[in-house]
Amino acid sequence: MDLRVAFAGLTLKNPLLTASGTFGYGREAAEIYDLGILGGVMVKGVSREPWPGNPPARVARAPGGMLNAIGLQNPGLKHFVEVDLPFLRRYQTAVVVNVVGHDQQGFVDVVQGVTGQEGVAAIELNISCPNVADGLLFSQDPASARRLVQAARAATGLPLIVKISPNVTDPVALGQACKEAGADALSAINTLLGMAIDTARRRPVLGNRTGGLSGPAVKPIGLRIVYDLAAQVGLPVIGMGGIETGLDALEYIMAGARAVAVGTAVFRDPYAPPRIVRELGEELQSHGFENATQAWAAANPAAREAAS
Amino acid sequence: MRGWDLEVTAANRPAPGYAEISCKAPQAVAALPGQFFMLRAGEHPDTYLPRAFSWYRQEAPDRLSFLFRVQGPGTRHLGGLRAGDHLYALGPLGHGFTLPERPVRAALLGGGVGVPPLWGLARNLLAGGSEVLALIGARSGAHLVGAEEIAALGAEVRLATDDGSAGRKGLLTDLLEGEQVDALYACGPEPMLRRVQEISLGAGLPAELALEAPMACGYGVCMGCVVERTRPQDELGDYGRYARVCREGPVFRAEEVRF
Ligand SMILES: Cc1cc2nc3c(=O)[nH]c(=O)nc-3n(C[C@H](O)[C@H](O)[C@H](O)COP(=O)(O)OP(=O)(O)OC[C@H]3O[C@@H](n4cnc5c(N)ncnc54)[C@H](O)[C@@H]3O)c2cc1C
Ligand SMILES: Cc1cc2nc3c(=O)[nH]c(=O)nc-3n(C[C@H](O)[C@H](O)[C@H](O)COP(=O)(O)O)c2cc1C
Ligand code: FES
Image (cartoon, rainbow over all chains, first blue to last red; front, side, top):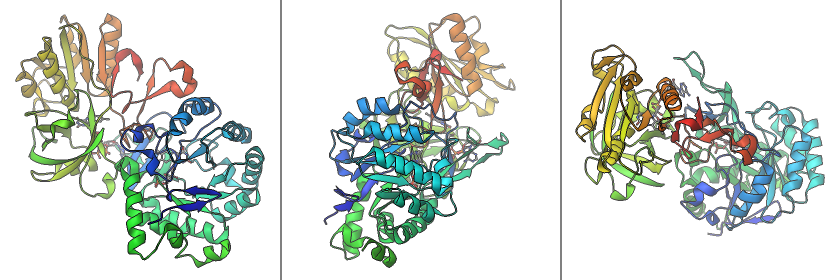
C-alpha cells in the first residue's frame, strides 16, 4: 500500500503525524520506536521565551478522554533550536513546529527564528489553545487572525498551517480569513473548553479551573469541523481529535483531511502511532483503495470540488 | 519503559477499600523500588487514561503485585480484576529511591496508600546491610496495609493511627521522636510529606520523598504531572519552574520540591 500523501507542498511518507503537545519533542517515544515510522511530528508549542505553564493540577479524567490545562510549558525558541531540533533531525520524519505567543510579535519572532533552520518542514500557528489567558485571542475574531497570519506569512516561506479552534461559532469563517491571509493549510481541531468538579474538595479539579477536552469523546466534533473546512475553505487540512485506530484515521481522511494527527491516544498507548500507520494501510486495502490519496474526501464530494 | 500484558494470578482485599492484585510478570519487567507503572484493563469510558501505581511486592522472581485504595472509576475497575484477567502495564517508569553507599539506619515512612513502594525499598536496604525502621500509618488499625509484609522482610515496624486503634495515636512523623536514623524515605499524603521535609531540612537529615500527581501519560510527554521546584533550572529560565513527577520523579530529594 502506498501511504505517501502530498500535503501543502510536502510529501509525507504516510498521513499520520503526532499532535502538538502530546509528544513533547519526540525524545520519549524515540526510546521505544523509530520516529522515522511517522509521517511527521508536530512538536509541543514553542514560544519566544521559556514558559512555565499553569499551576497543577493540570490533567483530569473525562468520559472517553481527558481534560488538560498544561498552559504551554515549553523551554522556548533558543532551547528548541539548539537542543530539540538537532535531536529530531536524526529521524526521517517531517518536523512541524507548533508556534505560540502572547501577542503577534511573539508569534512572528518564533516563526522567524525557526525559518531557515535545517529540518523544519512546516510551521503550525497555534491560535487555538484554550489554556492560556490570551490563547484564543486570535481565534475570537477573524480580523485579528488575518493580521497575525499575514505577519507570519511575511516572515516565512515554509508551509504555514493554522490550527483552528472548535471553541468558536464559525470555524469556517476563521479558516477563510486564514486562507485569504496566505495560510497554506489548516489543522483541526484543538481541544474543547471544559471543566471537572472535585466534589470532595468542592472546587474545580484543574488548577486553571477550565481545561481542554480531548480524546475519543471529541471525534464527532473534529470530523464535522474538518468536513466543513475541507468543503468550504478548500485548503488542505490535517484532521485530529480522538483518533485512536486506523479506522478513525480513515474516517478523517474520507471527511476531507489530507493528513491526520494522533494526540491523547498516545497517553493511553505509547505505541499507538506505529500501530495506527499499520492499521491505516490495512483499512485502506479492505476498503478497496490502492493508495492513501484515493481515499481523500471520499465522503465529502464538496471538498473534492473545492480543491479542483 | 515497555508495554506489558500481565496476567492476574490473585486478587485480594487486604483491608476495607484496598485491593492487591498479583500478576505473572516476566523477569524483564525488573523495576526498582519507587518506580511505577501505568495500568489499565478493559474498556471503560471513564478510565480512558491509564492510572499510575507503584509496584508493591515481588513474592517470587516472576511475580509482581500492586496495592491500591479504591478511590474512583480507575481503581474501582482495576479492583474488580480476578485471577486469569489481563491488564496492560507500561513501565517501569520514573526514578526510584537512591540506596545509600554504605549500610545505614534508615527510617521508612508510609502513610495510607504510600506504603507500596516501601516494600521493595526495605528489601533492598536490608539486603545491602542497612537497618530498616518502618513507620506505617493509617486512619485506623483496620486500614493498615503492608505492615506484616514489611516486618516479614526483617524490618522493625512501628505503627501509628489517627484513632489510636493500632500503634500510637497521632502523626506518623511523631514516631521519629528520639530515634537515631541516618536517612528518611517517605511516601504518603502531602501533609505528611511536608512534615518529613521540615524534619529533614531542620535536622540536616537526607530524605527522599515519593510524590504523586494526577498523570495522563506517565512517560513525560504531556507535562501534566508537575511539581514546583525549589531551585528552578537556571539555564531554562521559567520553563524550569516545574519538574515532571513521572520523569524527574516520582522520587525527589526533600529539598528539591516546593509543596
Ligand atoms: C507515581 C504514582 C504512584 C502511585 N502509586 C499508588 C499505589 O501504589 N497505590 C495507590 O492506591 N495509589 C497510587 N497512586 C495513586 C493512584 O494513581 C490514584 O489513586 C488513581 O489514579 C485514582 O484513579 P481513580 O480513577 O480510581 O480515581 P479518580 O476519581 O480519578 O481520582 C481520585 C480523586 O481525584 C479527584 N479527581 C481527579 N480527577 C477528577 C475528575 N475529572 N472529576 C472528579 N474528580 C476528580 C477526586 O477527588 C477523586 O476522588 C499513585 C500515583 C502516582 C502518581
Ligand atoms: C496534554 C495536551 C497538550 C496539548 N498541547 C498542545 C499544544 O502545545 N499546541 C497545540 O496546538 N495543541 C495542543 N494540544 C491539542 C492537541 O494537539 C490536539 O489538537 C487535541 O488534543 C485533539 O486531538 P486528540 O483528541 O487526538 O488529543 C494538546 C492536547 C493535550 C491533550
Ligand atoms: S504524566 Fe505526562 S508528563 Fe508526566
